[in-house]
Image (cartoon, rainbow, N blue to C red):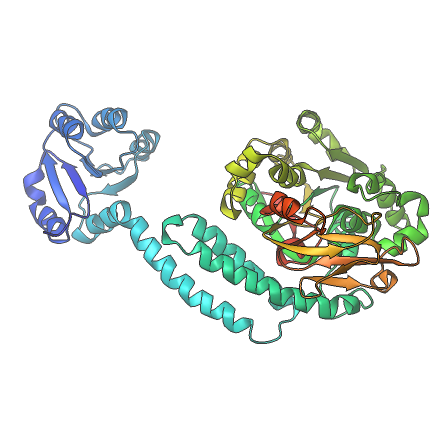
Length: 521
């Protein structure tokens, strides 16, 4: 005997007039129980497993809305579709307020009833089957793209495809396609690393036929708005990947008109290099040469290199001869309490022509997951990492700021990031002296050696517009999802950092980054 597609309860005091509809539903594989009044319907809901309720709004005795309220108390998640002759807007609002799942007006035809039953009883299955078919086709499309050389615009398009599919498959975990997509992303990153290795040096020495780089974000995406907009906000969310932004964007679409462009982070994809490049408009070597007092090189601690972002911003504005009055406001949010303070005062910042806000929480989330076994347990994979980002953002001061600023119609908000992060799953053995830096995705030091299939060796840093840091100093930058481990206690550190989110290297997640422009609706 074929299993029922779902148990339907149809409540109507004129149920005999609906026999043709009921026969159709049974022919389509559904089980249908009927009731002619609210009291009998409530007893059925209490005693039987019901998957969907169809309920008439006008019945003698306990009416449709009253019956609905009791059914929702018994089974809050049970979908209920109201059917009525009454097209009054007030009734529709009452039904919506009572958490009705759908609303049909009489007379209903068989196809309407069948459609609503399929929607609630087979919708997820039908959608999953369609998603599976679509992704199988897309998998082949992406694989074909990798067979031919891609330019930077095509790499952006390919990365968008991968990210959008990752987020779509998050909704259908039982399909089992995540592993297939993860393997394909790894294949994409292998080809992307070859592409960057071949082209990066040319990009930093020319201005055409290449992606927008970190050094150009303010000039191309922020400064033009200063001419036409009374108040411009720049939010730089440290270590924010494209998929994390798309999670956040869900909360903002009702508040803002949103446009997205994309740029490539400079190398290494780490805060001292990429974020300083954003605020200074200079490559790291140029920054060190022009403003040696604003470039600290005593150690490789990332926080020590980003103390002077406001000063770099002011010098960039001065070099570009842009008049900004009053002086731009710069805020760096490092903890929750300070973020709440800024949230409560954010509307006062609209008096400024330009406000730059750096938000460090996403970076802290990436590092925290690496160090905290509880966070790793909460976010064991990419999908859960996006979910963790969602949980943070919907309760964050950053969302509070965006909600408050949406009240102002004459502002522009630009949101971007300095780099992303990649989930590191493979160790790469590196050899270097004791003075070499400790970063996991890039290193600088003397006599560095690593597998050239797993990293790029930058023998002459000046050719890549990086500080020399000594005559014999070189850089290595990890490709794909590799992370550097020294031979000493190799297995200990290999296991310690495996499956951590890191940045500094070459991957689509770290390098291909969004620049979002938001206008309050």
